[in-house]
Amino acid sequence: MTDRDIAQQGAGTTLDFDPAKLRAKYREERAKRLRGDGAQQYSKLEGDFAGLKADPYVEPGFTREPIADTVDAVIIGGGFGGILTGAQLRRNGVEKIRIIERGGDIGGTWYWNRYPGAACDVESYIYLPLLEEIGGLPPRKYATAPEIWEHTKKIAHRFDLYELALFQTSVTEAVWDSESETYTVRTDRGDEIRTRYLITATGSLSEPKLPGIAGIDKFEGHMIHTSRWDYDYTGGDQGGSLSKLADKRVAIIGTGATAVQVVPHLAESSKHLTVFQRTPSSIHVRADRPTDEEWFRNLPEGWQRARMENFTKAFSGVDVDVDLVNDSWTQSYFDAARAAAEGDVAPHQLANYMKMEDARARIDQVVERPETAEMLKPWYNFFCKRPCFHDGYLDVFNRENTTLVDTDGRGVESIDETGLWFGGVHYEVDCIVFATGFEVGTSSGSRTGFVLHGRDGVTLGEHWENGFRSLHGLAVHNFPNYFIINSLSQAGLTANFAHMLSVEAEQVGYIIGAAIEGSVKTVEVTADAEEAWVQEIISVATDNEIGAQNTAFQEECTPGYYNNEGQPFLRAIQNGPYGLGAVAYIQVLDDWREAGTLEGLSLTPAPVAVEAR
Ligand code: NDP
Image (cartoon, rainbow, N blue to C red):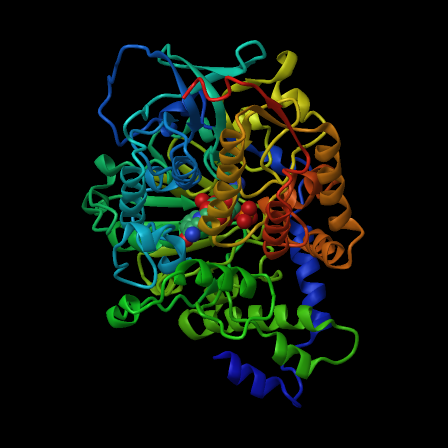
């Protein structure tokens, strides 16, 4: 059903659902899922599970001589955040740029996540950053993981980021030295690299996690975390055809965005697939299609940024004249909801109910067994959990070789040597696939794996003891010449991470460019500016009407990593994104640059400012 159909249906007619009943149902389903241990329910891939986190894509036994040298900038992380920042630094006159990356190549998310079916459900034309400059024609509206990975490599080549890059290398420590005004970065390969600028772009969904299910360590079959796919075991490739699973009984735990993409391939290739579901995802239409080459080749200069902005506006509920991307992310039911509004239900809530009713109706249309269809229905607001966009996932549950085990919000009860338990039933399997996601909201050290020392030896962990502190989510008091590219904490959040990472990279490039141009040696956020931004983050989330609405929305949501597993607290607000949304955040940065005063930054001028170059 299109927006127009909904609008026509909504205007002047009565709703075919009862908002009060839906609200009660959402609350009931949320209550089922609340648990005391919140985010603590998960564990790291360590100890007995360390093997699940090892890099399966490189030859074992790589060695090299340690490096000791000085560069202008070290960027930790070679994903989109790292390479986009590298590109901006290059443009702003930084010469020696060294990316340090634990994987075997550039790519970040798209290096690690090679599970069959991996793709991006944000449109390729806006998800592949610098597409106008780098060139290339995305073959379809949505890009596959290999296509995206190729694009990241092209960016790195274009901006000469491979030259000094260190792969299969993890940073263990970075220490600010006030005398030389540089950081010393140490790694697990014995490197000791001095750098004037340090940037962490370590990703927001990069540290895989496991569910804390009793007996998980007892299982004697094969285990895979989706972020480290084991093709030796499954056979096949990212396109599927996992031939070695033909005689295997496979279980998958998790039904989030990753599982939705991998499940159709597992179902097609395995002897039998059992999907263990705790909370169903909402599965919306993706409608992938080939690119209209003529249209693409005739796009005017600057089209990509305009399209990215248009998407982020539509996604954020800001009026746009034309919805350029026009997919299930951006289509809003708001006008229809306004027309149909009655009683005390706000139009935005009504629009949300409509969107989810639509998703639930789709399940009834696709899934043949009514009891299975019921189990697959999500009972929460759109965007309480990461929505999914797929045109093959629901059909899987019509297959004879696939079983859905709905755990009614409780999760798998236990695991033993041969399989999994739920509701008194034992499911014997050969392999368990964990599609259980990544750490979110844990300490920075936990996710990056290294300690950063700033002025007077203070660590980032100590500085953030009472919550994340920054100016614009990008720079931190006591940590001169240090920048964070993250896109989640205290910055703008949009579904198109590539857009926000581009914005952040440009801002950092601008600051470092200004420092170089002004022969400035150190740039540091003042304590006052940092405190002001922290207060802004908290106050827009709690006092401002829009922000408070967002906060109240999260509090009503079913648990997940978007709302700190249903335990919202002031710290989560402080650590979260800018409450007025991505469009407002971008405006803050634009205004800040427009003012041209580098407000809130303390600059230390020195005559030998560019000696390190
Ligand atoms: P998620 O964190 O989204 O999902 C984890 C899944 O594991 C959830 O379904 C969760 O259930 C389930 N789970 C956890 N513990 C248990 C348990 N004990 N028993 C049963 N189930 C359990 O991880 P994903 O890897 O799916 O996705 C992470 C993020 O990566 C996404 O949110 C998205 O941002 C990004 N992504 C983007 C894609 C794209 O196309 N752009 C594609 C894939 C991922 P519950 O919901 O109840 O917690």
